[in-house]
Amino acid sequence: MEETGRKIYKTIMLIVITAAITAVSTTMFVYQKLTGTMGVNNIVNSGNNTGLELTLAQIRSMLEEEYMGELDDEAMIESAIKGYVAGVGDIYTEYYPPVEMTSVLDTTYGNYIGIGIYMIVDSKNGVIEVQRPMEGSPAEAAGIKAGDIINKVNGEEVNAENVSEISDKIKGEEGTTVNLEILRGKETLNVAVERKRIVVKHIKSKVIEDNIGYIQLKDFEGGVAKEFKETYDALKSEGITSLIIDIRDNGGGIVDEAIEILDFFCKKDSTLLITVDKKGNEDITKAKEDQQIDVPVVILVNGSSASASEILAGALKDNGIAKLVGTKTYGKGVIQTLHRLTDGSGLKITSEEYYTPNHNRINKTGIEPDYEVKSNTINVEEPENDAQLQKAIELLK
Image 1 (cartoon, rainbow, N blue to C red):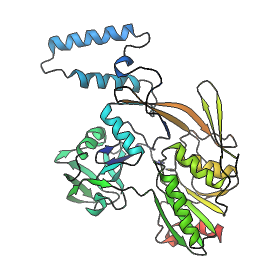
Image 2 (spheres, rainbow, N blue to C red; image 1 turned 60 degrees about the vertical axis):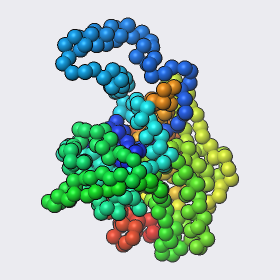
Image 3 (cartoon, helix red, strand yellow; image 1 turned 90 degrees about the vertical axis):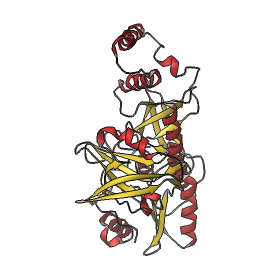
Image 4 (cartoon, one colour; image 1 turned 30 degrees about the horizontal axis):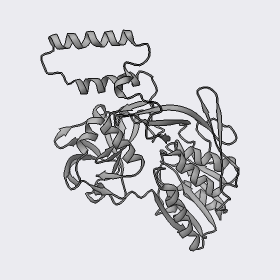
């Protein structure tokens, strides 16, 4: 996001992203098992870690001798591995215990049971803010609104420092209720929200003036490419002759979903994505299918368009298929590989950097729009009050 200290979290009952997830959704390649046989129990003991093993043994012995409480070895080992991986110093590389790994995979593939909110963790002000409730979610039905500050979960005070615990508190079984204390302006509200299975709508669409189609992509999670094509075909049957793709505030998701959408627009064998690994090996992803969508396209972007959103925007821009309107994108140009370890836990590693087809760097740079239009308002229902959307309509008329 454009503001420092603000991080976006998806909180969906059983499926909650924990504190280590950063400002944007991770663009990932997902593997169901780790290459080789290394499991969680081998991580600390692998490699030349004699000093580490000795230190841990000494600490364990001292705790056993002096600590007045009971020692939970499982929790301690889990925390040790998390800290070990965090020591890499990369905000996107992290370890997930088995329960969290299940949640991450469910989130990635859109299997949600929960209340359905996006949270912004504002570490600068020490608060957790609702970015927005998911459309049709229990949170929306309960009246939770964008901008609400979450003060308490089930009576326990929360803040930006304990977002993992908050996520755990919001989780639960389908049909159960979580009680939230909400600060809305100067008013304090108590809201009970029933946890339910959520059918995620990745896309919002409509036909606007002059036969212009509009598709808002909210994320790049599992199944979004298929939903995109179905949505476009429906708009086409209504007579659209051009298209606006809105990826403002879209933090990304699965790289293959973005590639599949690009394949609809680009000519066969066009370059869609360039990735480079730590050894400098370059891999070029090209369009596999014949072009299926051939209409004028404008893409709406802002400072929270990140990761897979930047893959989509960069490729359509470089291939001369779309013009970009809005503000510079976030600048997350690295890809994570998500490994599932043998005990069900997971390790997410920043494994590649990616570039646009013209070999432009994205990471920590972002993509400049063709037409810069500054605006803090996204208002699809009232396009006249959305300056960026207005500019897109103007270009397509």
